[in-house]
Length: 130
Image (cartoon, rainbow, N blue to C red; front, side, top):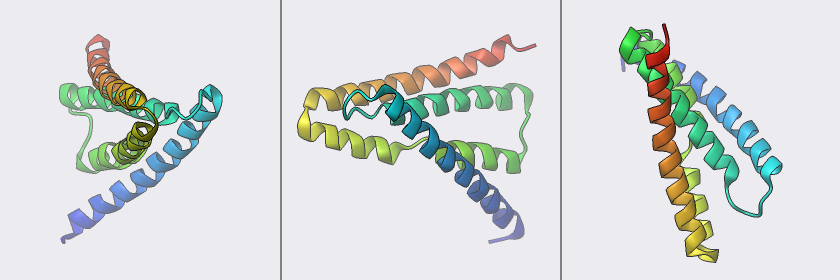
């Protein structure tokens, strides 16, 4: 691996630390705030917010060429990759399926629907910027 790859890997790692730490704090806070049984509201919140941020920043990157390779690696793969979590979503959905197939399907539908809508909404917001 060359010097550029090592540098990008360090940016991804630093961003991942930040994103994972923020996910831990926010998902726990949302779960305590909502506290409606065992439904994974915290994971839904971080994934929805992460998709919104990814859509918005991706729209900026596309329309204004705002981010260089190191900034993209840090923000998209690192921070947002660490902040959002597919594996936790999968694990929690399997746990819900053991108790209620309907709750598991509801979680999957909410995660997918909210994620896509948030990403599209974030991307659309960039069109209103001057």
